[in-house]
Length: 405
Length: 213
Image 1 (spheres, each protein chain N blue to C red):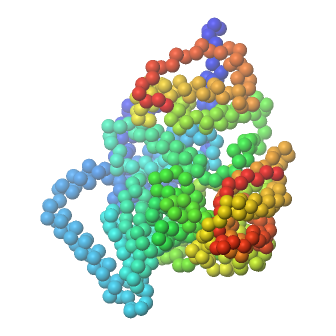
Image 2 (cartoon, rainbow over the protein chains, first blue to last red):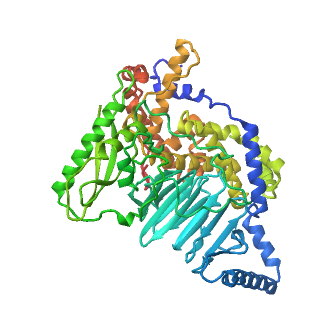
Image 3 (cartoon, rainbow over the protein chains, first blue to last red):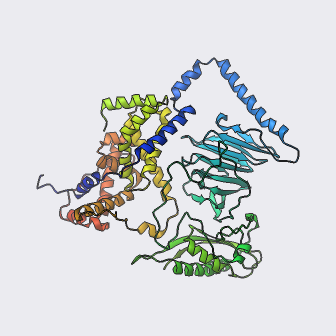
């Protein structure tokens, strides 16, 4: 080495990093999964280069191609119209047999009559059902993603676990990306209600970057992809989810690899993706706040439509005072149930969303991101009896708060 | 870097994969798993998501087999897919709710007993990955591909879809930022001190083109 030339410390670091090897992978398992996926893609006809498919299409006689399209269209029309003949008057009927989703072209619309439920199956990938009076159409989202846009009504789906975001539902500017789950999406005007019974979904505005993750047991309302509130629902959903493709109910355990959760938080700290458990929540809180974020698990209280929540206006001073009082209790619970190891000092930031009834009692409260279960259980208990003062029509308020030891 | 015969073999394997040949895919997978896992590891640092991401890369390969054109080198294409998968993963990770304290948590040391020198090296490597994570996606990609993967700027330009001058400009700024951040990592303080004592002559910045990093 030339002694006159200064050494480059960065180069020496790079040399050490180059020598750092990644951990060994379970290659046989990976290879087996990928080979299965290759076979599935071959069966779907997705492997051939587009040029080859174009050549094959050109070789077909044009009148045969037109005839094939006509047959498909007539068959599809018969499939949809036959449903109304099978439905008994006054009853909601399920289609005699599900539609083959893989045979539907992008842009194809599926509509369920006022007394029908339509089921669409995509071989080994997903099955979705349109509630009576609902409508949706397929979108080409590219990269093998199955995308359904809900135009009206409600849709519930079961997606085969294994491939993250292989199935996406869009509705009114909100996008629900599935990670192997059972879930439902319902339109109420501009509000999109997403409920997850198994697995998890990510919900986000279409073509934007912010997103919210919902786990099993969670139900949340979105407007244009932004959460209106992040309320935890009672376990029961309003509509049963359809069976998984193949007739077997999907299990929560995914056979494919699971995305790792973020590293374990410090003891007592908040856990972004866990449901709050409130074993010690006061019964009054459960009865008075059926859609509250901090609800006793398994209490069996049916969900209250969010339209019942207070929606009035209130003076800023009143809202500030309400938040201040609630924050005191949250801070107190945070300090009591959070402790860092050694010199570590734990802080947290969360957004409090409050719904206050006209009588001053709290209808619902949510924390986004959620805090640790024991902190939330404490908060649920303390807020159950808190009265923030009467108002003309109740109100809703949201604030970012920081919690410190 | 793959040689011409190897590239020819790759193209042939891809053609066979396009017919659903599982044996060909297995060969392709075994041949390139090291490249993919190494690149993911260097782009992300130590991560529990490594296996998931390697799988995702090859899933993307399967899904995109129909769009692979023979005129593109398979390894170039694979590099591009890998970087895209990693960047998408980082963006998704960055948008999950995080606690303030998670950002500040120190890395958990491995339980395997190490000699002092080896431990020091490991901590320095971990610290360097933390610095790499602070670079923008574009700068990190070119830095990793050039400094850690050993690719030329021309080859990197093919992978990231940028002119060679842009690649060199991003490299310049990436190095400059990393050098400036060295002092902020305790494990790299010695390196920073050494830098103070023997600072290399400043590199001339390449003439900037239209596109800035």
